[in-house]
Image 1: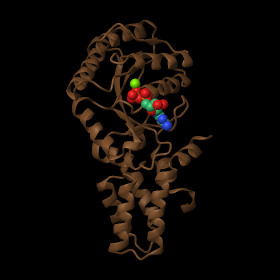
Image 2: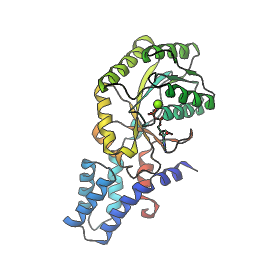
Image 3: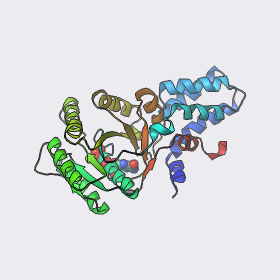
Image 4: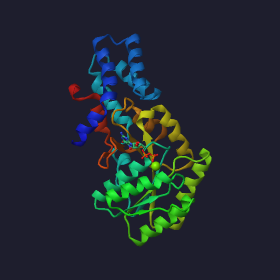
Length: 297
Ligand SMILES: Nc1nc2c(ncn2[C@@H]2O[C@H](COP(=O)(O)OP(=O)(O)O)[C@@H](O)[C@H]2O)c(=O)[nH]1
Ligand SMILES: [Mg+2]
């Protein structure tokens, strides 16, 4: 399936809630009551309060005119511009994939490895989730499937040490992209953040030839809750971009807007499935078009 078809398909449930809301409005007068209904439907799609308010304002101003076109334009304007969502990365680069457990870090790490390798880059995987035995195994399966080297150490309990070994190997191999899968759960949030910071500093201070990037995985199904999680990470770690995961089948695709406008984290990729190829660069205009469907064009 082509990307746009797949995105369109993945956003079906979000689109349904949005287009229902606008369809109802199109049949009614734009007044306090109908705008309130619109507001409720948009909040249910997890567009976030501020975004919803701004959309309602655009509709109000464009009442009697083609307000859908105005809303689309507005939505595109509050998403990352081309340069922000740009997926190009410096070379060589070490990319930390961070996020809460279960949001798709390991899967995304493998998908990114596949993505960069398809661009002709030399890629290595580094598994630093030393807290769960299953984590190393899961990444090992991906590594075998991709035929990309994985550096991990099942004996070590020290993520920063595994990272050091991994980057030493990556450097010796002249890798272009080192993808680092991290742990999502520690005893307390603070420990996790301290650990991630330490890893960040290992790259910056000990491997200055590598640029450092950190991407956070956000599970679209969690809606506004994922914003709270993401905020905790941004308070402790520089986050360069987000990968929105599990977009397939969620009704909460509106989360991108809040992510960009409230946390200033540009979405770089969307994950819409569990397979390697189910990762797509995020393009604001395509996203908005897919949210509204072709029938409005
Ligand atoms: N449907 C769907 N499932 C996903 C996606 N990304 C990850 N998953 C699934 O979510 C679960 C948790 O993913 P995992 O990568 O282990 O998360 P981690 O704990 O953050 O490393 C796994 O069952 C994955 O197959 C996605 O884009 N779509
Ligand atoms: Mg994992």
